[in-house]
Length: 98
Image 1 (cartoon, rainbow, N blue to C red):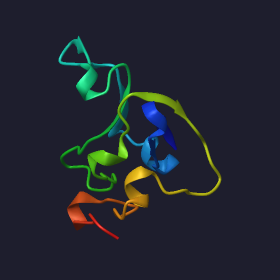
Image 2 (image 1 turned 135 degrees about the horizontal axis):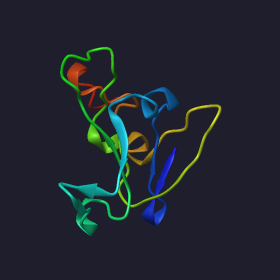
Image 3 (image 1 turned 45 degrees about the horizontal axis):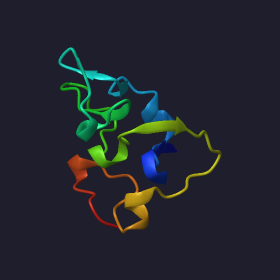
């Protein structure tokens, strides 16, 4: 679970966190992230062309203003999932809502 500012949680399976398309970002285009974009640290999940085996959930699964990461043995719903969004959020399967 990614814990962000104001108690905002974003859940993401460990397997996705360990993929080549997940990173913890502090900068974009050579400059520190702006506060609106998640300064000082943001989880980012992107798509790598020609790597269909990598899961690429929607960007809401990457928390802005990241403060800590919790490793759990069982999944818990994050903020958006508690509000009715799909838990896996695969954009290529159009998994937007539960």
